[in-house]
Image (cartoon, rainbow, N blue to C red; front, side, top):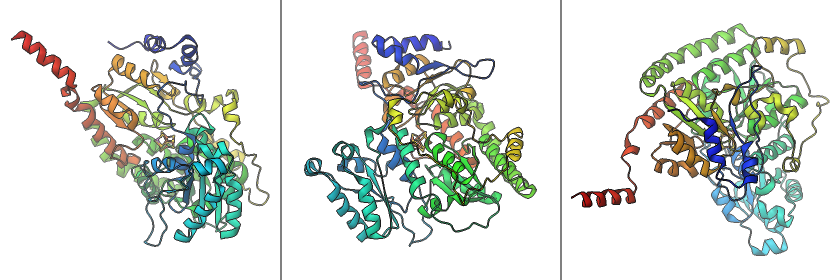
Length: 538
Ligand code: CFM
């Protein structure tokens, strides 16, 4: 029998003390669409209850690991105890492809100031200066970024003044991030801080003109498992120039030159919408939401880019690429549907994939019965139309909101107001994102920042055919007899973006949901019980 989402919600809440349950109730929502298309309000981007096991990461992780980390030629130095650097070293599967042996690639390195008790007591700026000089002498990078960990904020080291001095002394770009782990309620704060500094210190600092006709930036695509390579290939075949990607397979110079593009295509809205908004204000570059996860989403995104440029030849090339790819996609879809149709999935991951990957499951005939983000905001759940009513609390207020105005000489609206209206009527939404909930089924459970206790209860109640999360959840889920697909790192798989990626995903999920291996698994104590029963019986 299909579990009732309302009863499930009360079941989850009844384990908590009254006050916690009251607050938590607003973060666990049954998706019910109203006639005007609106969805229920969800509480999001708030502190995790102390004592709960959350899936979330910290602000430093969102800044250093997520947004800046994938850029190969920015030399990143973690200012703090060695653990923060070490545990953020190569743990995200962002791939990069240097253009030749001389192209800088620092991703494989882990640089840290290795703060000790002495620095905690007497300050760490001296050690930071020395570290920057040492790193410069070894690598001669064109840019150095400094990332603050919790103790840096607690003792009051001024990484920004160190960066300014070093910039002058070394003659290269050096800038710092006040991305102390505790700065926000999750890694989401780190995204915002990274966006701000990239915008202040990098975007628009390289004026090399770009002669190409159809120039875009891809925002919020981080090349996990090679996704960006697939997208790059598709765009190239369509004749669309990728000026920069924020920040999968990216370089510093591409960011610096990114204001030369005529369109920003936003993939992960949560992590990078700030750069999109600021580039629109300062340079006049419109942005649209795209989604290259799922064959249908990929086709739609390519078509929207073509509509934006409104060029017959481009449109024809895009249509050709789509039809070249779709034959193989449909063949695999047909095949996997025979085994996967009607199976159920749960997705609890990050700030955009819990939405995007539902499309891939739908293409396989699978149903998403519950989903949620770790750290997204209400607009990622309910759509940007709720933005005016989002309450800004003290935690969000501590993150700088840059005041951006049109650039005196470089502001150039890429499309006139009439053209923008025309695009909207043609189905290309400018600066819009509908969010996850409007696209989810009626009665599906939506849970923000899911706590581990709730994960275990959901598995018992719903027994989904697959659960998607990360490494921290994986083995607990599999011990419950349910396969777990990591949607952060893709386990060892991928790419899953684009048409080719969709085929990869269909095949892997088909294999996972149809394997019998988990039903054979016995915990040692279960085996002992069985032996004891057998002994009694004989
Ligand atoms: Fe954006 Fe990401 Fe995600 Fe994210 Fe992330 Fe990631 Fe993610 Mo892990 S930027 S919000 S902070 S799509 S690292 S590539 S998989 S939680 S859903």
